[in-house]
Length: 433
RNA sequence: GGAGGGAUGUCAGAGCGGCCGAAUGAACCGGUCUUGAAAACCGGCGUGGGCUUGCCCACCGUGGGUUCAAAUCCCACUCCCUCCGCCA
Image (cartoon, rainbow, N blue to C red; front, side, top):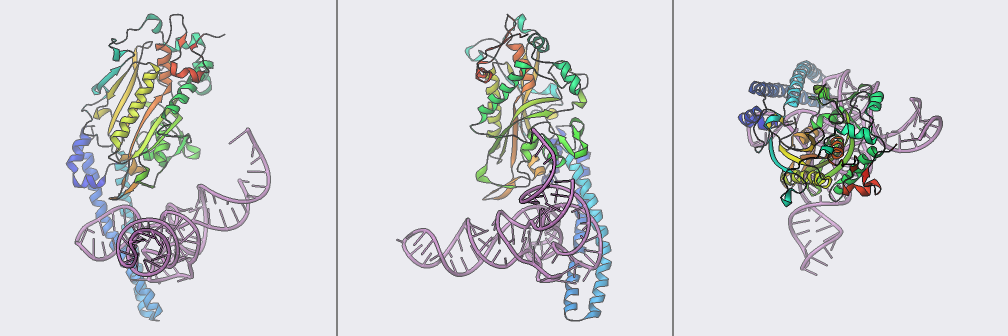
């Protein structure tokens, strides 16, 4: 949620900033008008309530001094006011609720460093990395044996059974088998171990309350992309960001606790409502995938470093896996609702011959903290924390990229060295009967 | 799923329908005393909102209701504790 006080004080700043993401100025003017109306009604309701409270006190005094006539008269007067107060309060609540609903739909202000642009085509490529780049090696040219789709490689090796997934849960719910499943486990175990030095490992619930989904900004706007369990009023989490951001919801943290860093691997559920028919092959786009998330509550001053740390860790994993990747600075038009600044990581996967998004590292300023009401106390008083988070990493696409990139001429797939201990010493995936 | 008990500030813990945003104690912050510390004593000490910056309003698990007036009475829900049932 954006800061209403800021909207009042500098409406033009907000309009310009949100205009960069395509929000119409008239929409913001409407919110401002609602706010003015709300305060007008609020004052009236509060004035009436103050008067009733005062009369009630007088009734009490009159009753104590056995002045029944005065008490009766005051009671009558107060009862009349009560009706007006009830109406005024209802009107106030209605406008307040409209105001809140509109406010919840407004996205965050992009940071100053976020590049201009309308959509993903305007994202700015910051840099690329590939094995040997530091020693002067050119961008990799991939061999023919690496140009096989991962779903075909997987079939040869019997490590993925997409048909079985379809049978169980419908399309885009993958089922991993044998070493394929073990590889997935290795990814998660390795990554979580890498983050242990600074991030507390959390295993949160896979479902969340509506309120929890509201806090990160996934509701109400992206409702159609979420799986709902209506009977129990729960939602399947689309990322561990959802539970982690709400872990300290409604609390005031001690400044000394910050930055408070956590990591969690969870299943992530996404309906992908807007992308039916796109990327339906293999693991490019799936309804359920495992992901390790890095998260931090921090002070505004700590936020840039916290953001940089998450990005560095995600990159370190990609480098450890030996994958080619690029870093994109997302433009204002492509930013997620809650984010002020986002950097995406995309790996190049030679089989499908495409860049695949495997991480998104975002800084939300106090947008989510305001929704979740997470504050910190310092010498200067209390203020909302900043939240930052990022994937390190989303495993389905990493799995695909490793399978394609590391396929050898003999058809086996070399396991990245860092994962070998997590694969029980196994160095290659080979066809098994 | 059934029966009973509970939910009040950072914590513990009072609270009669009427100066109750809330006693008291602890913690914490400041001061006096002290060479220093402890003790003692004095003062301070929740969050949010509105506007005429001094006042007003809201908040005692959540949401409704009764009343001139609700932390207090009534209803529903949530969570915690105890017991029974079921269960990986």
